Image 1: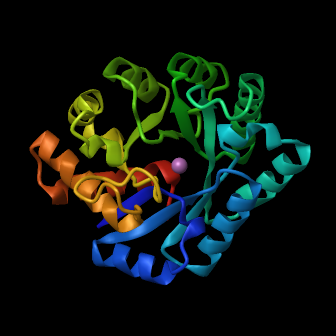
Image 2: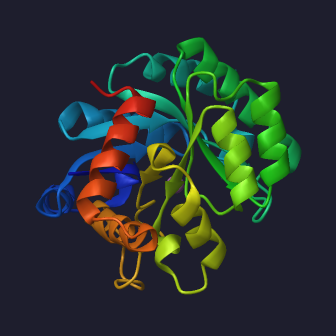
Length: 252
Ligand code: NI
């Protein structure tokens, strides 16, 4: 059994088919991630409607300029629901800079504090901002209730620093790509009890399906690649990453 720990299910016309295909591939739970208020409301709704779906709510760094007191308040209310497991995805994206960096920093800190208040873990998006993300997480005790570095793209020493402050490292489709040597090295070397798998669907489709729209069923290919990199069985990777997901997201 597998858990897709990071999926955006908000945009599938035939969700029932998507969920069935996931079940057919052994994906027992799917964590649906918000990226703004509307998608967070949808994620929470989907979690209410489908027993295998759980939600994470928050404002993505791309949308950081939209975060205000009112939105924070709504996120706080959502964050109290039992099937809303964490706050995310939050963080910094200095690659695309779709919101000004100052807005991104403010939104990141405000939502780290929100998670602390709710005593829930955080799901972090970090692109081209590794050191600043690490420094902010340290300063704000971002890992105090546990955290997940989603779609990890950094190097091994950074992963070690993040694990020291309570983070789990999550791998998505890119770990299956030929040119992802650095990510594959991290996936091969970090302790198995700190590792998660995800799709980040509908984006980042893993090999051998690259080019098609991604979906939670494909987390199987991510787990298979990690099994191959670590010379372990798929069963062992599936068992341990599922256990890790239950632990960090505190799924009963
Ligand atoms: Ni995402």
